Image 1: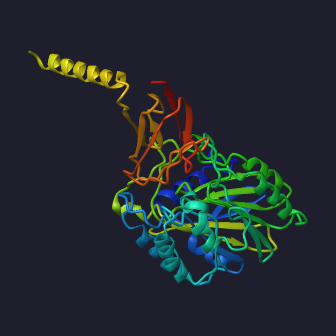
Image 2: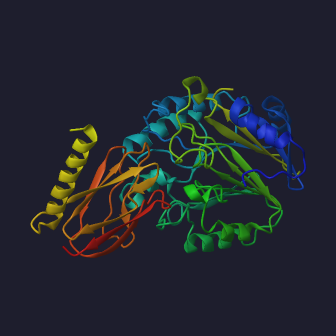
Image 3: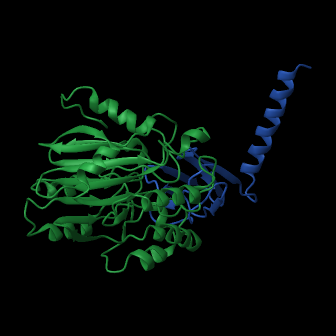
Length: 311
Length: 112
């Protein structure tokens, strides 16, 4: 379901546990579709400093003040402070949505004020919490310039093609996340003419794989989008929404979800609902964090490093 | 008189007054639907035309009450926020949370 063993022994599962519970960053490499871990964060940083490195943050939930984390602003500030302290400046940052908790102007203001401290370009996609105001006005005004539909777009960096998708708009009762016909058509057009060797990074808020449909953790029409990506040799799908690290590899596609900077959520099915999870105060920061992704060009190699706020 | 008997009589009196309220054509009722753990509770409920349904969000996450036909539509309800709608017309009204669409519910409205 959430992790697949490919006969590469116990290390992968152990390492995943390690990332989640002990908060150790781990370098993943992909070779022939099979992931294996190479070592801890420091080695990873040293080995891959020369590729394209970008960061992912997610689920900042500005305005959230419930028991699971009464100070979501403070933990976002901590995450940004850590990003500022990275010795090699990343190329840019992506934010995979739920910037705010209730789409309020003051919440967007707080997010901008804190995130801009990183002094990096930020490419956003909205979460469902960012589009609750009428007509999605606030999100579109701030982040939607030059995007299509409810905010999807693509761009290129260092030979890598990035596709930012929106799977939180116009959701239908009884369903999960959804891209919709118009966006799927746009993806098809956007990928047309791209060579199969172009590394592709797709990012969206809700996971583009069925993590746990009972909680709505999936995207109804993701199979159609992934069908359009089949011919590419290296596809990385980065999501948020579930406030925990999960990874799955299917053929040439690596799926990865990021931690939140605001509050953790329970593992699929381990609680009555996916609501915010209250953990002991001294444990909270080990369950919040950011992601760094590095491509070493010329090799079919990708590294995703999850770094908690506190290890 | 024992305690159980008292409780039973109290409950009976409550039922009788509820019955009178429902049977009286002049008085419409307020019906509560709780939003808890990402579910509408009760998920399906039958009310009379003219009754008002009041949803209250008890989760730490915002939810909406959104009719599939847009017959009614709440704003995002934060913790403890309420939304109410008076059902004037009979019929079956399917709704969901526009933020978490796996959350669904139905209000069935019968004639008075």
